[in-house]
Length: 291
Ligand SMILES: [Zn+2]
Ligand SMILES: [Zn+2]
Image (cartoon, rainbow, N blue to C red):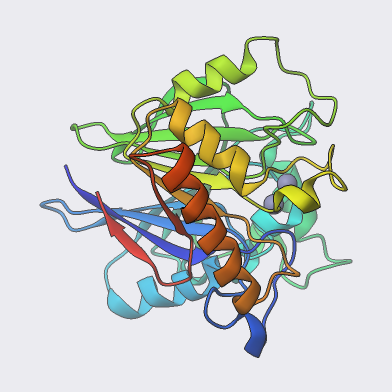
């Protein structure tokens, strides 16, 4: 089964609207995976950064049918959930929105999403949304979401953050989503000594790897322990895992379009030298890839 992946938000940490980020985009993380089927397309959304707002408008505008959406959340830092209260299908009583993601310690995902819409910070409580809502805590391992079989593994990032490897259950290509991940030596995370080998196996042979590339190598030494990676580290992982295509993701808020062009050029030159066979692109809002 083929599917498309569309980038609706690729900026890390905080939205960066404005003329200097217009080409790569300023919305925080959100990707849409869409399959075709006899009953019409199905939508699986990765993360609910501010990119989920224009995605929600697009799906509501193009279809008058009741909509079932699956939303898989990597973790609950603001930049990955802050668009959710503005996701248009939540305001349609014919919609069903199923949200999946890790709990944080003993705090269930549903409680975190509810707190984000607490009346002291947001006018519409979670319980007053029109859509049918189902929130499920996921664990490390394999489970099914919509048309996809999903594998989850923990990442090196503050809090509980999962990578997801998604393949159509009916057969097809694989996408691995690894946002917010520190490949380098900084930080103190609860992962075992085999973690990097496990991650290489996890991404192994994937058709597409979307990976955190927030920093340049020069920037990285100032931000060790912050839970993010450089483009060089992402390229090394892609090469070690025999990945076909690497999508640089979670762009640094300070990096405007001109600086992004230079950053991507540097990454492509590096990949040509050290990771032959790995195609490198940057996530750009509006980019659609067919798998
Ligand atoms: Zn983030
Ligand atoms: Zn994060």
